[in-house]
Image (cartoon, rainbow, N blue to C red; front, side, top):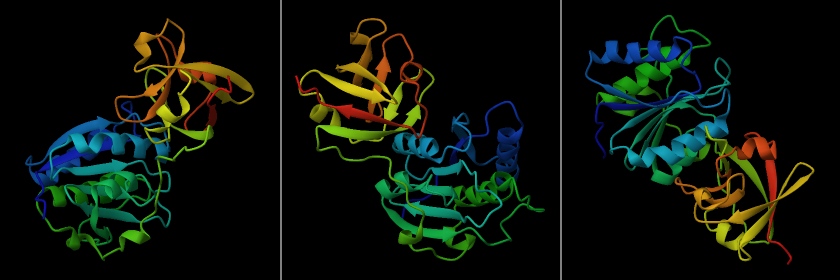
Length: 270
């Protein structure tokens, strides 16, 4: 069994303007007596976007040392019946809401055990209905990072009972619909497709892109910087996802798409 490293990787949609990130990190430091290190992945996941949170976690987790505990709070269902869970995988631990945000990363690494975080002895009290990141998830993640078995957090949950979320779809046809799963700071549009879809759609060197009622042509290149300024490019991004980008521009603005929207990609007929 992989042993925890006293390292928490912290990911939320809290943003940096409010005190929430600092409060959670203060709780971790207090409960661990300064023995657990925290690395911020990002706190700028778009508000309430489970898909974007799942994408960031899935594309980040494998770069951390084995034994890292991932504390993920993208939780629009806080205070409802959604479960709080802790998951042990082949190399890592994941703590957060059971809304799908943890699933792609945990499933890829291989889920060994899942627990409902329901042991009230673990919680920071009084427990707020709207800040489980502070009162439930942070204490649970801290205990796991300190070496406590996740069995202490609550009853077993079968992996098949976890809320599932899929980030990638296959595309064997010459025309596919793709969901936007992330848009980065530069406006690059990551698509929920498998990496091999780029080769499938790019047989003729470019691909047709329909966003809403507008039709665009994207050049197929290894990287956006090989294109002319302002040119739309279809390529595989550094995190292994097919992506649309504009060299020295903003693809999301050009296409007028947001996370969760769909675009249609097609291999040109001529």
